[in-house]
Image 1: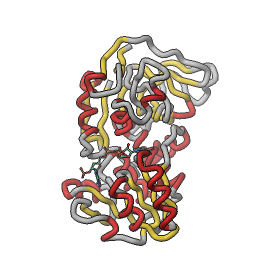
Image 2: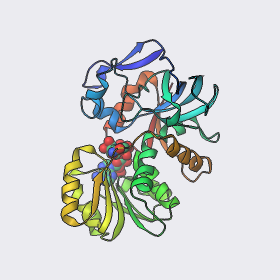
Image 3: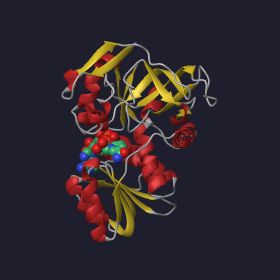
Image 4: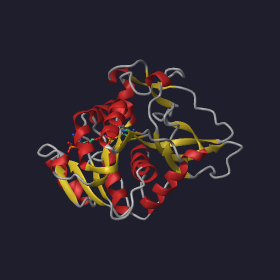
Length: 313
Ligand SMILES: NC(=O)c1ccc[n+]([C@@H]2O[C@H](COP(=O)([O-])OP(=O)(O)OC[C@H]3O[C@@H](n4cnc5c(N)ncnc54)[C@H](OP(=O)(O)O)[C@@H]3O)[C@@H](O)[C@H]2O)c1
């Protein structure tokens, strides 16, 4: 089968199209013929030798990618939930070696959900790592409830655009940030207020939020902590700021921390229901074929992606 191998850590020239054997299905796993994958900032961080690179290199060849949507072609002997021919989507083995940049991927049945019939494989592949992060941040960790004031930063990005929609579904009042160019897109997702982060820091506008999502970190940590009420929650997404958010939150009496998204089939099922009912939707701004995956990397690396980008196989 065709796969994209990362030959060594570094630039996009290290992503090479290769012909490798199809993976073998074990007991509780399924083999998926991949129709679409999506690309995330963690793919870039791992490609350049950070994030999960050291973990992945223990099991060569390194094949990046975690987000897939496709069709099951084989099931392991212990799998009862799915059958050959089912269309499924999910985030495979995160934080581990997902090996999704390939024509076929092996996944645990417990990480997958049936793809809603009303959305494409591309829209489904988009709604995996980014949508799971938004779900696990707002629901599992943040326990956001009706009437709460929620700030979603980088609301026009992969995680942010699902987070706005999920927060509205939960009944929250949503204040969302992006540049002016993406204001209309962010408001179209259901945000109640928009802040242009290039003109205002969020703590110039809000200081009593119940929950703040921070996908940025660094100089944005203090404004995030100032925007939340005492006892409120700030969730930090870039792992680089894990220690800083923990220390600064303690000093401010705020419940602030970094968390990492995890593969979870039950959460995927919830997302599938919301996608099927049209309560949330994927905004796919670019689509690339597998042999143009380097262009997809450059797009995510720009830090300016609107919604999600996908690669079709
Ligand atoms: N901890 C975890 O489990 C986890 C999971 C997923 C993602 N992450 C991390 O979270 C971060 C975001 O991921 P993503 O997939 O959403 O990225 P993304 O799709 O690449 O985000 C791009 C968006 O960010 C916006 N943006 C950039 N700088 C901004 C700023 N200072 N303020 C507000 N918006 C800004 C841009 O909007 P404009 O063009 O309008 O500026 C753009 O639309 C990454 O660092 C990623 O690695 C962590």
